[in-house]
Image (cartoon, rainbow, N blue to C red):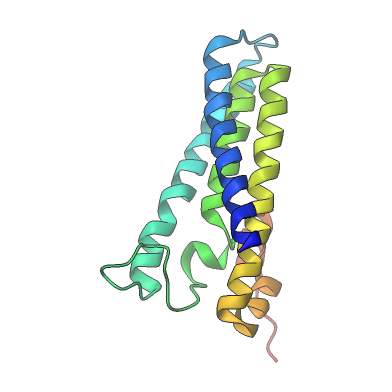
Length: 166
């Protein structure tokens, strides 16, 4: 129960920090004004949005979620599609939202809020791994060895690399 409360607390803190980061984006001047970083922010934002919404469709189609249940309540371990690239695409997408705001704003205060929020998301993903080991056991442990938590680049490289025959 204590771990659940800590996870909830981190979720609320990360949510408040994301809202605060967006507010800072609108109210603070962009001191550096580097346009290339703003364009990179839009690219990262787009990838983040896709990663936030994609899990809903993958879980509904592959996770054997009962119709009356929330889309996150899978009954089987999903390790295909985006989940063969990263274990927590939703959290990675959320983390990328912070990064996009940092690149858009380029203000030291937004950077601090963004890094704090990104830290919360990382801790939430670690707790989620623990919860999923309890739910799926050794199958999830094996899955963690082959799919990175939130490193999209490493996940794509591992996916494209030819497998060794055993």
